[in-house]
Image (cartoon, rainbow, N blue to C red; front, side, top):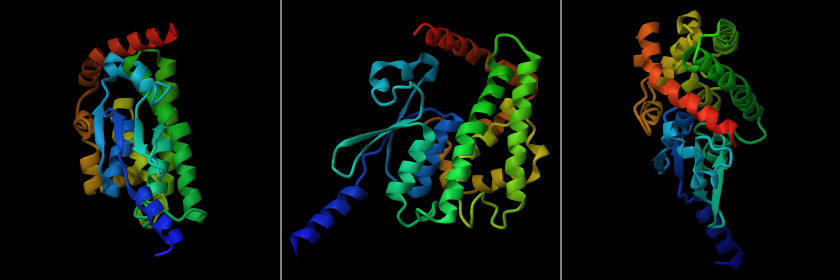
Length: 265
């Protein structure tokens, strides 16, 4: 065996080895990563970050994600060193780029489908997540109900749901891109599953509702959504508005406390 071939084989072996450690919580952004990890069949360790206690603001966590948000991840890189990943979209891209060589949930780099997946990933990161997050805040966590804020962000979330619903109506496969589930679907699924928490009725969007429950049938989604904690969005969707507000009461206090702490830094 030539030295060049040995070097290549060593590189390939190192590239396939992982030491994935995910620091996360059971939020729409957090479960994106665990769902993808399960879909890829990868081994990984999970640390549950208690965001109600601001664990994500501790110095050790900030070394992994200086922005102090979940999810964050470390892995063994191809040269044996440690690589850090933060921002959920970045983590999803890293995982498929490095570990999905068979394109189970991705498309070859440079293909039209590859760029279409990127379109939807960036759309979710820049639109659906932030807008629905604000709908959550003004609907559930604000110390007082501000009708303008509630209406503004619920309506924008509905508009974005309509974009998804329209795209899925044109899909022959039932997925956002091509003939397979991808990170385009995975990135948005956790947000859509929590529609009721944002004050949005999923029944307004029949294609999106079909997509939501179709993906729930996949073992990777079912297992990944419950890591690191039980995913309760579908149970929450059965509650009345009064019951949901009561559920939000405890969280409202630590959300407000966290905002005050951030403002002082």
